[in-house]
Each structure stands twice: as structure tokens, then as C-alpha cells.
Amino acid sequence: MSQKIKLDVVSDVVCPWCIIGYKRLEQAIRELGVEDRIDLEWQPFELNPHMPLEGQNLREHLAEKYGTTKEDSIRARENLTNLGAELGFRFQYDDDMKMLNTFESHILLEYAKSQGKQTELKLRLFSAFFGEGKDISNREVLATELQVVGLDSQEALQLLDNPEARLQVQQAEDMWKRAGISSVPTVVFNRESALTGAQPVDVYKQVLQELLDK
Image 1 (cartoon, rainbow, N blue to C red):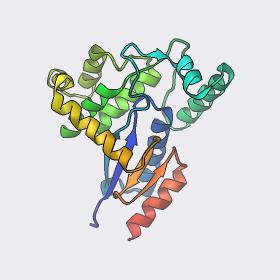
Image 2 (image 1 turned 180 degrees about the vertical axis):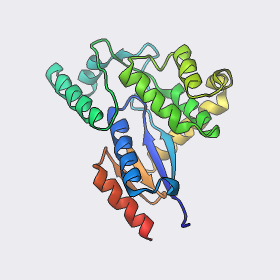
Image 3 (image 1 turned 60 degrees about the horizontal axis):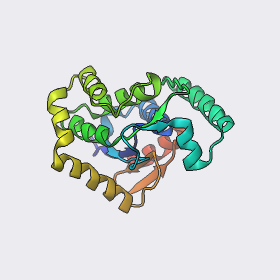
Image 4 (image 1 turned 90 degrees about the horizontal axis):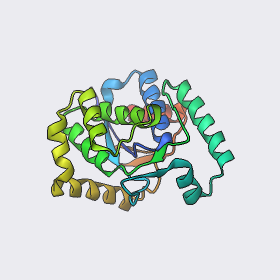
């Protein structure tokens, strides 16, 4: 058996294109039949590192940050909802949806990695935020989602106030920024090359096949 392909998926849990990109990548891996050849790890990135803990209305946030109009927002949400449905992921937008601070979710994803359940928790958080309208910056909500994927919520939540655990995530975020990553999703292949944005399935398949053929 050849060496595994190392995939680092740099993303945030409130990034809609991150879940679309992942679902396409997942489909590419499945169609190639190489699930056992992939070592995938999620890496932290905060779209809004200075977002206050109370969050901000999503439409208001996008208008401030990107100049997005309400009409732009409606079109974008319809597009994302349709793309998600094609990939088996449910987007359920509403007018009260908030953009949230995600730093603590990244700490928990590091914990989940140590327990072999990082992807399970990542997908659960995507679904909780985009599909169920949950406030995933709320520690009680996070405790529930940890339990859903079979993780020890008490042990995990203790890390949220642990200076070392917080520093570890900050250092990881800084490392990927220094590596030149400024937008997500970014999939890094064997720490050698990268694709940014939610690429089509065939693009992921092509890159993976080239690596498999080496």
C-alpha cells in the first residue's frame, strides 16, 4: 500500500462554501474509491476573529463587510441551498440568523481530533449552524453537539478556559496565515500544493489521482 495522501482542510464552521467544498472533496474521494488512502485533518481559520460573543445579524454583517444588498443575500442563500441539496447537505437560512464567534469551536475540534472524531464534530457543527439555526458560540449548545458525536463534553469544555489550548489554536491559525492562506476553504495536499475555494468534484479528483499515481 502506498503512502497516504495528507489533506489539511483549512476552514471555518460558519463558512457555507467550506461545507460545500468538503462535500465535493468527499464525493471525489468516494468516486475514486480511495477512502483508505486519505488522512484528512481540519485546520482552524476564523472568518471573523473579532466578532463579539453576542454575534451579529448575518445580513447586517455581510452588508457591512462586503456591501452585500438584501437582494444579493437572497440570491446567494438560494444558490447555496440548492448546491447543498445536490450534495446532501441542508441549509436552512432565516432572517434572524447570526454570524458568530467561532474560536471556541476550533478549540473543541482540536480536542475531537485527539479523540479520533474531528470530522464527525466538524460536520455536526456545520449542520447545527446552517441547518438547525443553533448558536454554536454558546457553550451549552457546544456541550450538546459534543455529546451527539460521542465525546466527553465535560472534559472538552474544560479546555475552553485553558490558556495552553487557546494558544495552540491561535498559533495554528497564525501558521496557516503565514503560509499564505487568506480565504477558505483551502485544501492543502501533502503540505505541498493547495486549492482554494469550493472546487468542482472533477478538479479534486484530478489532483488526487495525480498524487495517487506518483
